[in-house]
Image 1 (cartoon, chains in turn purple, orange):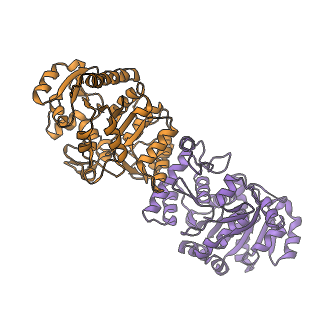
Image 2 (cartoon, helix red, strand yellow; image 1 turned 90 degrees about the horizontal axis):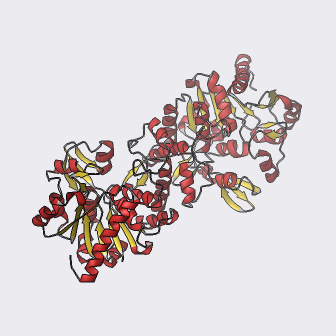
Image 3 (cartoon, one colour; image 1 turned 45 degrees about the vertical axis):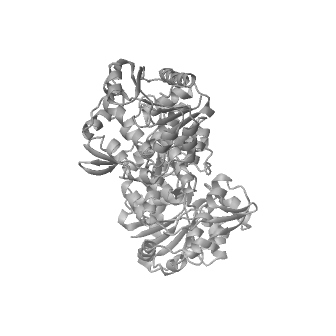
Length: 319
Length: 319
């Protein structure tokens, strides 16, 4: 059973961890959002790729669920003392080592896909960690305070400025990589992780060739809702949905996925949403335990999702 | 009394510290070797400038006399794990913060002089810290093992490969900065610090315009020998002199300075060298306590050197 996961930040990393625990590495591809990527102090920083890498390799900081456990802040303290721009972005010392490596390799002409493969190898991660594109696709947040780059809005301004619109122009001009295309074509199941649909999944869907590749992907396509009891476990999803004037319920999220997803998974505690969502869009909806605070529960969810795809293979059910 | 010091690594930094303790900052210029500068992990590293900065600002590691006290190595450990080139260069985490700042500012078009001034200001160092040139002037070490960049020979290969010749082609094509020219012209005393003459002082003398500027400098020009009892306090000086086939005594060093220096200072313990050196070259030679392991003794030496210049001013002695 070959698995492809579309992953954003922490929710995506946890979902990846679940599959990594039960699927042979050669059969697992994690396709990762690059809309959050940005430059700090001249270094190319890929927060979503790194969160997945750190999570899968076991070095992730367990408290914040991103960055490296027990990391230092000596470099950042010097940059603060020097009044350097961008010091609001929390980059630990060990983390900077990785960004230095990536930035050097990119400057030498390596693709982000190449570099991610090198990093994975050296961190002992053996599944495929695939940036959705090798081109820069920054998500631009249009706010009442003007246009902001994603990290400016999210980290510097703590997701404060009301969001009018998300802009993905660079993604539209970019293309998904061949590795992503091949992974989607070969997958028995494509899972849209319980990441923020607007900030993590949508930026990937907007990359040139992605919607087409998803449409053509022969496997079962399953989206896991990031909402549990109407709230996101982490991050500014509900506030963002309010800003954007879209409701913050499963019935509001599901339609954004309904064009290219076969199954929409809500949390077992939200089983009352199953009928609502099914009614609102032509999607098969099912409830599962989607809270995945640790590897064991992430593996349990991964197993349940694989069962969905197995049943379909067995019964010929198209979802 | 305006002072200009030509400084290389640790010896230069200590001499600078001595003057900084007794001369008002506006009257003190430290002109620093850039022949050791190199790129690591995409960052522009200036070991001599940084040693002077860290020493004058009091953050220097007291054991090794370079780098930042109590610095971490987390970034370097990750770079090692990633098998990145150049990890033999010991760059601490706080140190990397400074290199990130400098590299970003240079990429924005700031000169090395501008950046050094910004760094000094933020580190609370108020004398002028002046790179000898804003252009890259790498010292190339011609060895039995081929051509090596200075840090490759010095740090990676631990000064092991026998040196046939030092090459300064880039320095010949470069120019000293206007700030250096002005500092030399205005100084009542120009001190060549007890740095390695071949690796720290000579690379500065080879920069376009430097010998001329020194010749024209109206102040007393004093070179302090780095030898004490025939040995260098730090670094590979004696081995290098043996490699180069030049003797490793004060009588061997003094002639390299004799064209543009008025006074050659040997250690008080080497007063027997005074006559030898005077005999060998047309230089005034004097003995002083040149061992400067701490600020107090560095200040004492600085005071003695200033006395030399004061006597000259008073008596009209041209040295």
